[in-house]
Length: 149
Length: 117
Image (cartoon, rainbow over all chains, first blue to last red; front, side, top):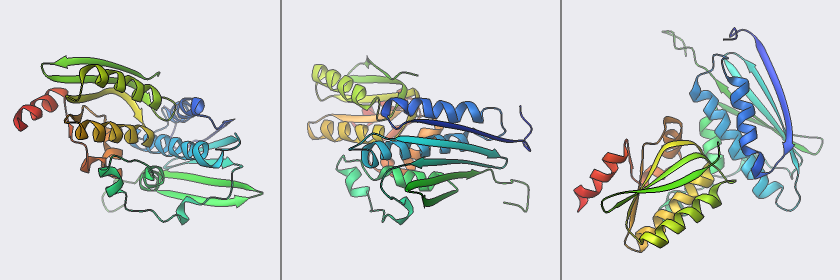
């Protein structure tokens, strides 16, 4: 196992396509293996980035295929993935999330991705830089020692 | 891991085993496979065995909701079983738990149907 104090980073740039979703999860899983992060946090990033990329494919790149760059940075107890895309400006944190309970009861999905991301990540940051969206998904391992959180 | 769908049965209950990863790249395979099974078996009682389902995104949850709604409207039913902890967390978080019932094991899901009858 790597020392928790070590800093690790890794990058990948792929076409934002459904066929690459598994590859993206493998990139996260392989690079976070044996780094001291609990499975729950690795899963939170894996699910969040998958949801984000599914949204990119379905919406931002619906008319024209594009790429997504992912940079993973591990600095225990914090892990973050920064995703860059060239889609139209979109800040998920500015979206008003509807009450989807009625949709779910009617057998309809939709609007679940952003809700999932914002609930699973400890923080999500957004910036529009040089015509690109930069979303950063952050998870933190909380100190469980008495008196600290 | 590639997504797979297989069917089994326990008396009147149809067990559908899912394995691999269910996201927008594999959701069509789930829907087609499930449609084939329900087309053959009819609107009966189904249990989705998720023990070997390693990953599920909202595309997968949406597909489950669609199948649940269709089965319910035609007199059938659908329950989930043996969900992994990571999936269970999202299942509760997005509110699917308020719609589709889930059980710790396939046996419990099958038994729960018997209790209702």
